Length: 386
Image 1 (cartoon, rainbow, N blue to C red):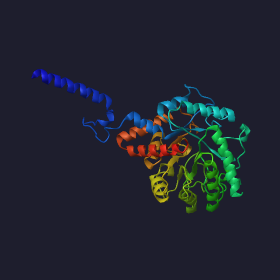
Image 2: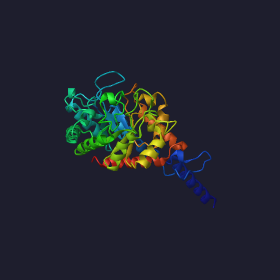
Image 3: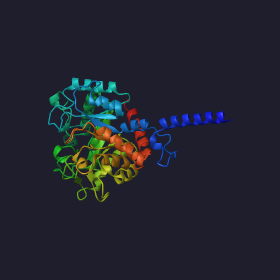
């Protein structure tokens, strides 16, 4: 009898040790009890899902298996990359893009190293905001402001030219069109850069629809920006806080509303702008009131919500990086851009961001359902580019 009891105890000890080894420590509470709600939560799996929520910028016009961006994609399961032609932190005019042949090879090589489909993104609006400049051998794409003065057929044809070029390079997500209204022509980041089709919401919708359709003809995903509207601002969110409380007009929301109703919208980029009439504490990019209440519930958008660059001064200068990332996810953001092309270049940013979200899940500050919801929306989005 004693022998049987001893054998039984040995078996129990072995099973317990194995169980403790394989079950993440996060499922065991301080009192030693098991949190059954988290018992099926795998840290590795969850971190991989969190990794899909990030679009990362990097330095380099070519890559190999030891390159930072390749290691980051593999180690963190990053969801996408963003390409730039100019490196702001160093002031060097060579970042990722030199010419069409080099850019195409860069993209192809990056994709070959990724186990999951990647969003290869870029800002290619046309005019002054276009990483694919004619000086590098790419097409000369007119600004939105110029297109807004033309017939809509011209806008569609222009978008087709751009879409074909993007497709040939292997780029599948363009952060365009801008649907901000040109309500303040002296706006340093919209009006003065000719990034708005018009101050008339109807004209913006007409030209934005053609721009989107032209890109869709070549299977290029789009992102309308900058929700809820950046056109009335007097300052630049790249540099610091932008308060539109006194300048914002309700009509600025109309292009977003109408394009969503027309089911033309793949993703929406949310701006780092304050409107204290809506949220006293946070900019739209970190605000549940803007993302959940207005964009999701009022406008009915069910796709992927993308934050504007988390490296912008509006975020970096006013919030802790990790705190801002967590707040954006809590607010309902599905993907976040870390460009590494603001005032600093920090290759540790993606991992720190993922760690911050994982830690917030452990404390209950972020719901695991937010992660699974985002993962599913991202999966559906990526299905469009296969």
